[in-house]
Image 1 (tube, one colour):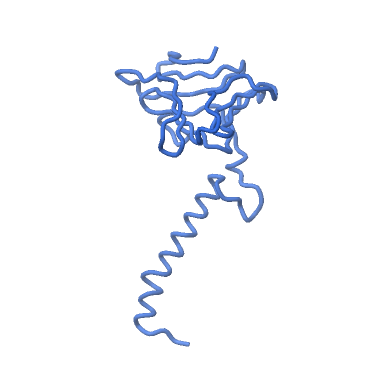
Image 2 (cartoon, rainbow, N blue to C red):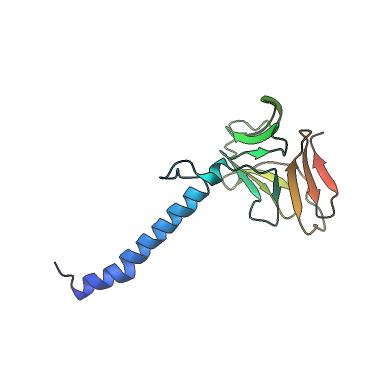
Length: 160
């Protein structure tokens, strides 16, 4: 079966680019842990980190991801719209935003740590600095403290 000139044009100009874009999007979402890998467990989904930085690619925590202290005794997760800190398996702190739809915790460039429900604001640390520092880091420490600090090392928010 041979394609007409219009058919060839459609395949080359529409179908192939669309297929390449779909494969690239699927691969990106699989690496991000949003889609399961066809080859088993996605490494990105199981990866843990101990901080979010406003000026890096790791500036947010999504529902299903875990922020873990360096000593692995404390974990921060988003569950049912609530950001929860677990210490040795027990709840140590939470945002009290259960069922808010919160699904995305972001360390913003102004120093504010914000929980969003998609694009809607749910909770924040109310810590924007004026003028803002060069960058901000939200960390979970070995003692179970959650802290936001600026690029000079100054702590601007903590739970303890």
